[in-house]
Image 1 (cartoon, rainbow, N blue to C red):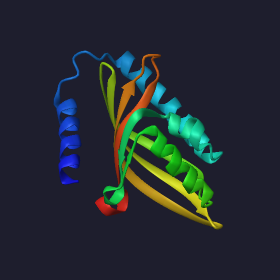
Image 2 (cartoon, rainbow, N blue to C red):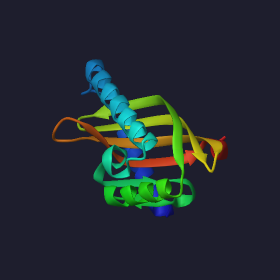
Image 3 (tube, rainbow, N blue to C red):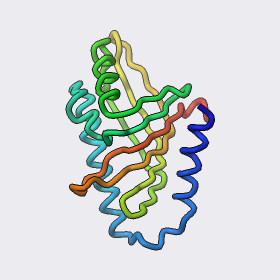
Image 4 (cartoon, one colour):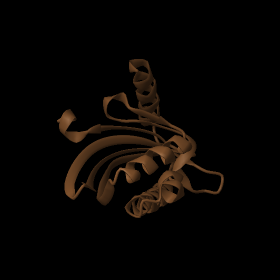
Length: 159
């Protein structure tokens, strides 16, 4: 697990340290807007519990998500199944807010560092969770942007 995280972090570091010579501010704004729209669709799908639709559609076919405790999800189909199981248990996403702290764009790859807060409801009880995350977005052939890799940790655990 440590090797996996070290490899992913190494990729992030290389992308972030290479000067942004080829990306103009206009292109960065276009990418920011596309990411914002993709996240809005993703959240809306969670709120209506549409796992197979837009919730998992925000990810590439071979997406890889690493979460708290090293929990991993590989591929859109695994995410669909995980989301469907979560909804089956009765977990509902009520609110989702995020703030991008940094966005670096290199050709067809964008690296986003962000914080998010998610309010869920389970058995009538609301729970607010706060996270820090880093995502690699990948431009698709149709020009849209999808999440390719994500690592997230609890903001409480990291503070």
